[in-house]
Length: 195
Image (cartoon, rainbow, N blue to C red; front, side, top):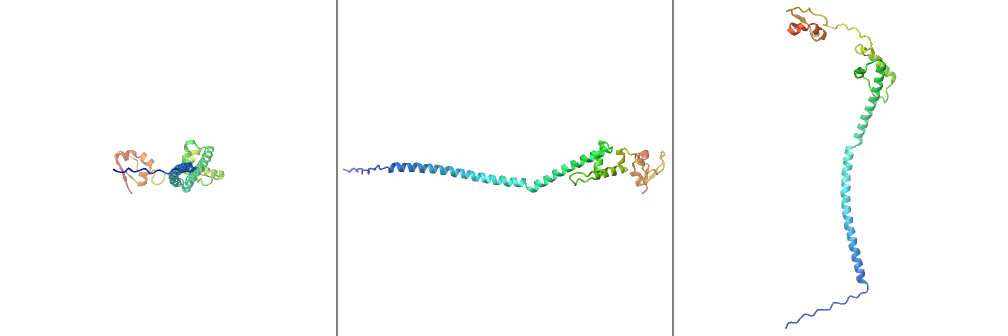
């Protein structure tokens, strides 16, 4: 017969409060491990957020660099300065009798510089007077047009006769008045250039 193993008796656990202490310590350990795991997850997310923030800061710095912002500020200040000068210039021209549809042309022809923050009224007056005295622009201020003397080649040439040829210089052919008067000969090919 085989012998049966007899179970060894387990030692009796003495309940002197150690079991309860161990249970509480295990619970505290488990709670601390859960908090540690949560803290590690938050740290990982924070590291990702920090990296995203660094990338965003670098992009913003590149996009909104002080040089680019200064250039944009200078451009906008220049536009404001030009607007101030143009408004004062238009007012002076209108007061001098210039029609509103000629203001753009007179502004371009004046060569006015918008370097100062505000336009100088004395300089503005001198510029308007200079525009009024110009032969080609005085008509905008109600001044009688100056008589224009024909330039070289104007008004010269032989009269157009049916079938006759005209000898004309390059200056005459480039002169619109001469071409208008001799348009019939030009259309028929009766003009010979002599230079």
